[in-house]
Image (cartoon, rainbow, N blue to C red):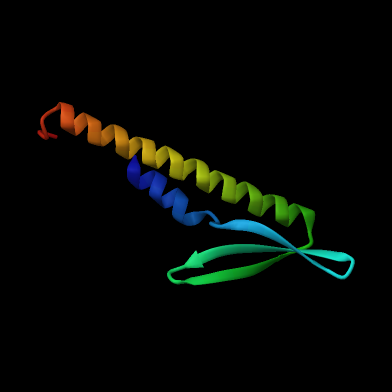
Length: 85
């Protein structure tokens, strides 16, 4: 189950959406870390594309939270079972 969550997490966009206002226009970017670098990718101004990326980022955060809980429970189960699993 942990592998499934990790695979889903790796398929989804990471980071956060930032808005830059240049003149009278707003431009949307996805900002994330790639190792030591901070990467900023242009999303565009299309509302559907922006919403799609927002949903992916939110799904990724949700799966990361679920994976952390799963690991925590797994650790607790191993501790209770005496490490025999």
